[in-house]
Amino acid sequence: MDVPDDSDMMIEEEQSILEAQTSSAVEELKLALAFQGKGAVQKKVNALRELRRLLSKSEFPPIETAIKSGAIPLLAQCLSFGSQDEQLLEAAWCLTNIAAGQSEETRALLPALPLLIAHIGEKSSVPVAEQCAWALGNVAGEGEELRHILLSQGALLPLAKMMLPNKGSTVRTAAWALSNLIKGPDPKAATELIKIEGVVDAILRHLSKSDDELVTEIAWVVVYLSALSTVATSVLVKSDLLQLLVQRLASSNSLQLLIPVLRSLGNLIAGDAYSTNVVLVPGYEITDNIIHALSKCLNSEHRVLKKEAAWVLSNIAAGSIAHKQLIYKSEAVPLLIQLLSTSTFDIKKEVAYVLGNLCVAPAEGSGRSSLIFDHLVAFVRSGCLRGFIDLVRSADIEAARLGLQFMELVLRGMPNSEGQKLVEKEDGIDAMERFQFHENEDLRNMANQLVDKYFGEDYGLDE
Image (cartoon, rainbow, N blue to C red; front, side):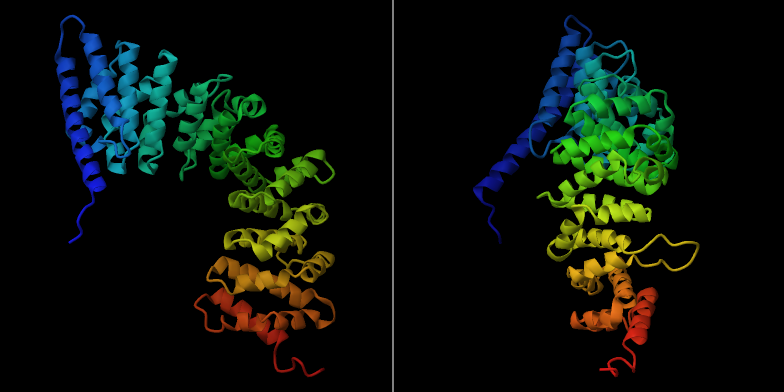
């Protein structure tokens, strides 16, 4: 048998003491709520503060014990209208801590949700409203079902109104709670939010003037608006949002801020052709600025920035020939080529999308895409083919398809049958033949057709 060491025994002992103290604190709160004499309010506040202190105390807060001891209905009672702010604040704080627990513990807050929502209204004091918004944000982050309950109980409008002022931690908390509330997968909340008067102006104002912490939370709101709602995306791309995001991308070094800014840009560019057709036009300063800023991210030491930047570039590279030529001539291409051979698989895959998109002109009608010959030749001469053949060998179906598509371009487009020799030299035939009996019909057919067409019985006879 394993003998527990002293530290484990100490932790278990401390936890049992903490649970006993929590049960006692809930009992004290019950007595305080029943007490009607002099000092009754302070008695309630003291009992709430002790419970809040215990729920905030350890790495494993005694949330389950508090719930089993009957804390939730008592805390809901403490949120009754007409209560003093100090009592409301402490009760909301306790509920915030409970909402940060396990899924079933968060669900235990259901009876208190209407009161938490009521206290984020305009009649509440700022500290109380912010604490209630924090609790609601924790609940919304727990899952789709709880988000649906909060939305049906009217949480969206008061949280949106909390985001409208110019500054303050309350605005930041409200934006964070909103991003949790609208994150879907149902797009209805995102569409409703963008239609609330003042929301678009507030988003633009905060992105323009606010500090990095607030801008980070606002950018996450934009991420979910642009990912889920075509209505929201259409509204946002016609505002100054893209310019503001590009400015933040170019000027900030905060990883926490750059991730949602990059994701917002990618969503907006992929989600509405207005972005590339009207705003990010080759020759405009903003277009040069975004490619320069994305190149900075490709050169970052942070893996997630490289991946997100490559994803945004792949969306721009899916645009017009002018967009493709602009990226091709930029500082981004040498970085992309290097990343294809040296980076981790997830980054290679995003980079492959960019390079692949740069090699084909937009298809007209339903026909096959035509090659951009000089781009393809330059990439192959730079050694890109090996990176794409590595993707063909991967277990990832999407990556393998990317690799096969690029090999088809090489075999079709390189002059003097050079493509066949290069593919053979990099063991590309072997990579394709592994799909001969593959379960994925598309990949099997694509690989077999390439082998038959370019490496059939006649291959090598001319030599």
